Image (cartoon, rainbow, N blue to C red; front, side, top):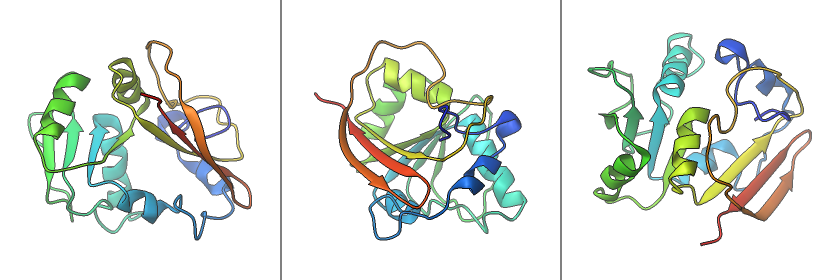
Length: 176
């Protein structure tokens, strides 16, 4: 995210990510290691559309998350065919309903991929146990934020900080 908490700029522009110099090599925060650390994903419709656009534009060769189960939160009637995605599940419902569906599967660690409105719903329902944040050295000003919504105060404990050439990786855990 940007220094002002944005996940993207207006129209889901990700140009601010180019300000990151480095990739947290040899740390648990290198992107492929982060992805490998989760065996399932929950993604909102808007973030899902952004991923599809990146595939269409050739920024991703195919679906970047492998065959792990992915719950796409949307009111669409059907999901499009996505190259490389073999385990997409369309779902509409509350955060509690989504987590109940996830709990029925043999998975242990679920990544809430986004976006800000979805994150706010899961924070409100107290389903977020950990935050792994990459902080880019830029200000975006407008666009979706880390958590767009109203939710009760949630406290997290800082567990780890890593510095790369231009950015920070922060890991927070929710005390239970």
